[in-house]
Image 1 (spheres, rainbow, N blue to C red):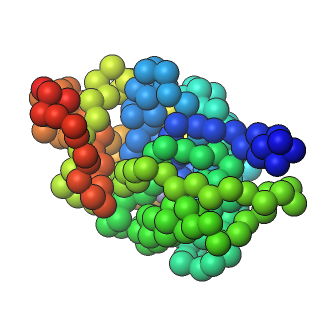
Image 2: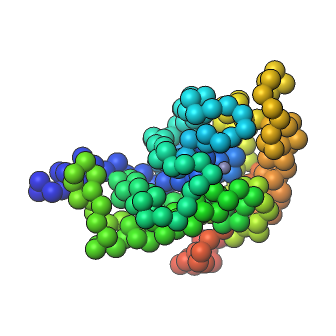
Image 3: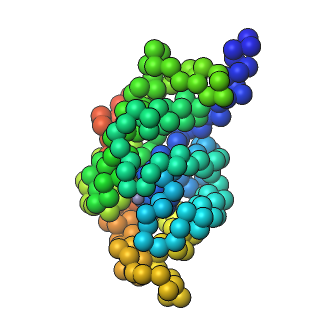
Length: 249
Ligand SMILES: [Zn+2]
C-alpha cells in the first residue's frame, strides 16, 4: 500500500513521451503529431537531452525561454531537460540511465525520438540510446531510483523515429493538415535559431528563409504520400500489429 503510494508520487503518466537531442528538434519534426495527439485527448510530455549550447545562434538561456514559449503553445504536460553535453550525446550508461528514469517516471505507451539517420550525429546517437533505454527500462533487474524511491520497470509499446533533415522513407505518416500552421508557430518560437531579418548573429544552416520553406516542403511531401495536405513521417523498428484490415480503411 505504502509502496503504491510512493509510486504514485514519483510517477506522472503520459500517453506519449517525446525524447529529442536538442530543444527545437521536436518542433521541427513532430510538433504536428504532438498537437494532433493532444487534440484527440492524449497527454504528451517532452524531454530534451541537451540545452543546444553549441548552436551557432542564441545561447542556453535564450533557448530555454524559447522552449518554454513553445511548450505553452503546444500544451505539453511538461518539458524536462537532461542537460547532456550538446554535440556529445553518446552511448554511455550514465546517459542511458537518466533516460530510463524519465521513461519509468512517465510510463509512456509511445516514445517519439530523433531520426536514426540524420545530418547531426546527436540525432542518430539519441535514437540509439533512447531505443536502448526503452528496452532496459522494462527489465526488472535493472534498478533505478528517483528521490530515493525504487522505480518500477516500464517498457513503452512503440518507438516512433521522426524524420528531420535527411530524407528517410517513412513507415507511417500522420496527417497533420489541421495543425500545420500551429506547428510553424511553435517552430518560430525558437526565434534565435530560425529566419529573423533583424538578427545580427551569424548565419547558420537553419537560419535562412529557405530553411522554413524546406520544413513546409517536407510536410507537403509527407502529406502527399497519404493523400493529405500536410504530414509527418516516422520509421519503426517493427511492423505495427493490426487486428483487422478494417482498422486501416
Ligand atoms: Zn537537433
